[in-house]
Image 1 (tube, helix red, strand yellow):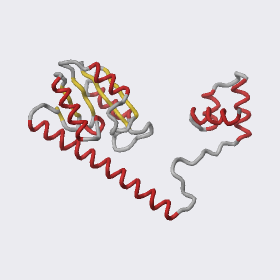
Image 2: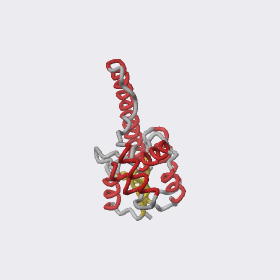
Image 3: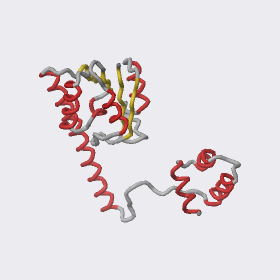
Image 4: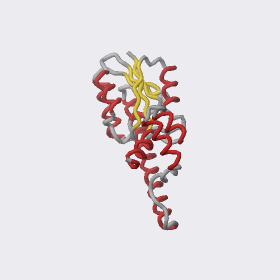
Length: 192
């Protein structure tokens, strides 16, 4: 069976051809019969859907990913996982690289590409950290994280009453306010 795996670091990731939709379209075009996907950082090898996929893979199966950095971002864990799959008789196909075979050249390519992915991630972390330090130094009001959403409380209260009365759904209320489901429930807890 041909399995596909797609991963984004964040649910909103949509650049450089890494969105879930873009990856899934490429995996479907490559003939994947079943596709698993996660929204987890590539540095974590324990990802729910990835773990399910790893348990399903059997000798003769093919695992397809769009890019090697979707598979793993650390060279050591990625190389170990690819080798474990080869040992189980599972073929690994990376769409932007080709077959990650168990030859010396195949192992070299996997190791090099994973090393570059790990380097790229480390550079992103370093630039982000430097940016935060500069922001703290130049802006005394700077705070890490997202700014709190400004929700008109009178409108929220009215929608909350309607939702509690069963006149509208949570989805209707949060859509009108332009907030996420988790933000809606956080406001509800604060209102109670």
